[in-house]
Image 1 (cartoon, rainbow, N blue to C red):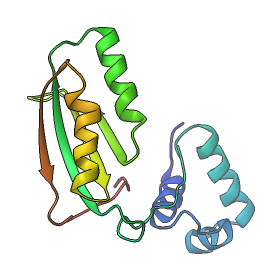
Image 2: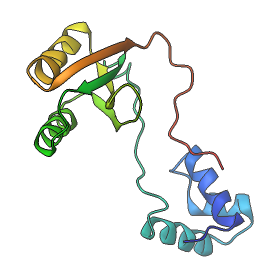
Image 3: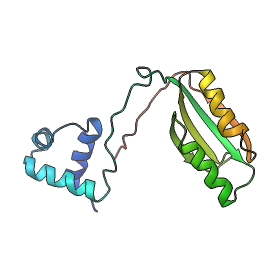
Length: 152
């Protein structure tokens, strides 16, 4: 799907607040509610808008201990990788998980309740997996910019 300037304006407004109604968006960009809603539906159907979610306060739900973990696997056979990916994806507290280039194979972003929960995570995911060569943990002292909004 090729996006025009009107689509881009709609997307910018939706990224600020996905609960903004088609009426409000249409008023902002001088387009009828029905035309705005049609465009939104097309962008959803085509996958331009992948998902709309509520972003929760980690502090409010008691998961504000934020860690970033770099992982290197010793062996990258399909079975080893599939098992590792499955075990990490299933773990409560993992909010982001990336396969990356560079010194590490994977980067995991983990929201924990406390250090004890993170210790359990390391035992369950890293120490119990003979194929994890190394992992390096960074504790986030203070988030500077956190966003999933794409700028264009």
